[in-house]
Length: 114
Image (cartoon, rainbow, N blue to C red; front, side, top):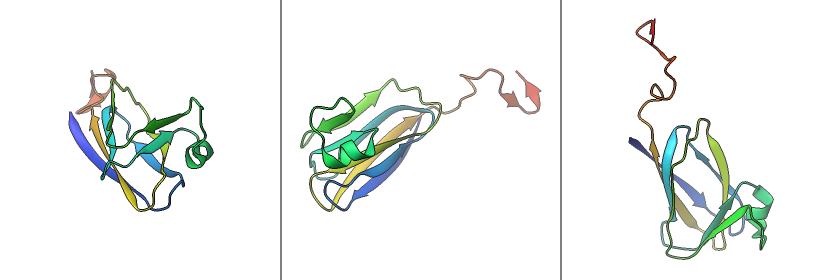
């Protein structure tokens, strides 16, 4: 597996920022640089407004790290991230499959179909 690093500057509190998870991601780790609590989801308004008790927003408590394993992303996925404090940084580490050739045996290599 190869790794890819990204960061999101969370400049304004309770504003939704985007993070795109790369295709072929199999595992990821997300955390704020200083351990501040934050939240993520698939719906921009609910993440920004910190809507309570909705299934689509996941809140990560202070000093916690969010790990997700067993992903099978064939396309990039954009998520929304927000924090209740100004001037924070979210760091993301993605582990990606080295090659999609194993998943797609019809991939053409060196001009020959395998």
